[in-house]
Image (cartoon, rainbow, N blue to C red; front, side):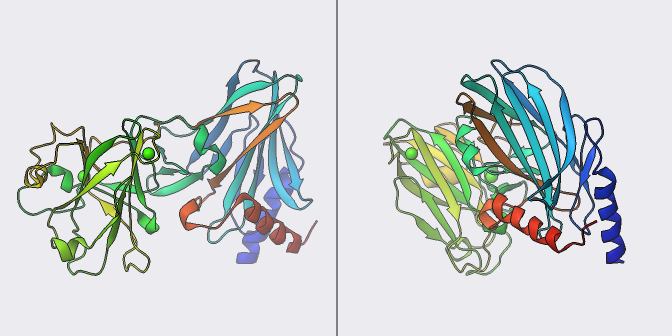
Length: 380
Ligand SMILES: [Ca+2]
Ligand SMILES: [Ca+2]
């Protein structure tokens, strides 16, 4: 059965190997369903499509050629080459045979061709419902894209928000007693990824940060300890069930300071090594001006939300990502005759893209894995 599937997918590769220019090119790995690059260069996956856009001075429309190529002589790949005025845009995609579903590796290369320095913006068009994180893009619970590490600095950011790979779980907690509604909604770092927030602050400035927690999954202590870090303050480790009890809202206060004077205040919540439940949670954030020591009873009751500099119902309605929605844009500076590359890992049919914090895969090791599989595969 498996052999039949392998042969069928090999035939797809063979059938498309002659495609040049005007037809779509499929690519796969032995035994996996194929992905497709359309004649215009658009990548088609089971979760949707991905289009690479280019803008900037000197960028003009031009023809696109899509062809089947072999990387390292053995890896079947689809390549779209587009003349775009001052630059050439080359998108190459191949499948890497990672367990269990494989992953597509898309390299976007921009070459300057008019012998003068150029600045261009590479944009990726994906479904508006996609959720953009620091290093990943998700649709629902599925990671569909891993973003290049070197491009994080080039992304446009909002003033504040979460910058992590955690997920929002509205209504997850069942806080008992009179308390702010922020305790009901949480964000959780599934797979052990830390929860991270960034807020603006005067460079070198001070503030009081209050973090709200409420554990509703575990009924006994010792399951999900949390390590909460606020820039400029000593880290605080807490076991919410031991300290407050299950379903009991609790608060931690930190004397925060913009220690590295970059005008940004960093807040993270993780779990310590050896934690039985590795997934950190966070329910609420309050930031108060320096000198105003907040009355914690009033904070817990939601009576100081209006006087706080910032009140965030983590995982709730007033929460936001620091990454602007629907915008995946990277600015590239090319010297005369120079080139830049960005590599994206793309969920292939039935699979998902790796989350960098919980995966060791890189573009290089993925390519090596593909090379090894195809070297062992009988050639035609
Ligand atoms: Ca800082
Ligand atoms: Ca909340």
